[in-house]
Image (cartoon, rainbow, N blue to C red; front, side, top):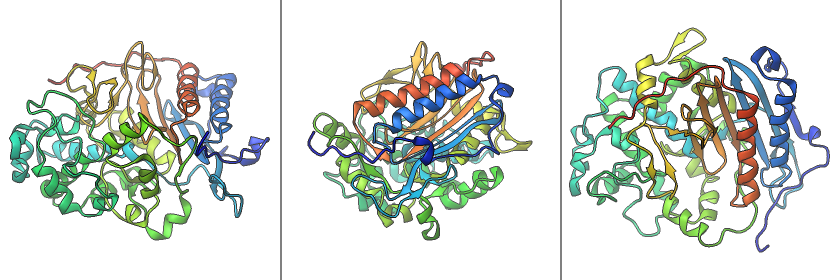
Length: 423
């Protein structure tokens, strides 16, 4: 197929696999059979055999302990067409969370609400008066976090990715933008836009820059290795580049990508490797973390705001952050039925984003196949990070099979409290 790009896959996948055996607990101690653990890893290997993922890391926590912490592939030297200077990936390598960053950034606003600095039912204009044009003075912070603020796209034709570096310009454009839905009732995924308004709220209300807020309120209390917006120059050699893999995107994928991301699929992948992207603060899309870092955050949320005896967020804050905002509806940008909380993509029954019977689960997807979620019923927190960006059906199908393998191997152990939707 024209433009089909894949990476070299060795016959012996064990030769490019790294397992943190010191971190992994015996599966039987966590209520998972040896066969269940093998089933999950087989699903990961089957995805890798597609040649669509140069680098892949996964961390699964079950009952608060690490069930799986592994990597497969190469840090560098094995992108499509590359065959030199190969370096193996390690499980602790930092990778970009892409849109899964939204869930982490949202917690910064929830922290301000917890501290009494704002309320999610406050209107955005109470803190950013210039957001008012075109009826947006009615938008609440809760609506903003749940993709109901009416600003899913920039009011700019063919925006250049370099615009993401210009914070004040982004905020100004979004404040002037007419709403997607003048009644603010329709959900439309805000891929990159809402993050700048969320970030501006953190800056104005908290009197703190986002990198400092993320470090002080989340990364340091949780003892995370990386978690930051972008990546410092001295750490960039530790993170793999991103590659467009598989078949060259064609319509309607190209149209969907342009609508959601604002730029062509391939341009979005290229831009994610630019130093400008790595140096910027893109609240909805450029947090870097290891899979262990991300899993710890979701474990903390799973444990009602605590991690290893340290209180990070109040339990009520976690419940508010994961409570649905309205009923499930067809998303105006993604074109699929989905529920959002103020910051998270929610699961559904009988099947949802996070597997079968996952209505209590919450998490976020990043650039197609980055997946971070927690499932209270199965008592798991999961982070799956990778650097291959592909529209190949095999990639989606085998990623879904990984989720399914995790769900089958980690059977429900408790009845989760299902929160009523917030109007």
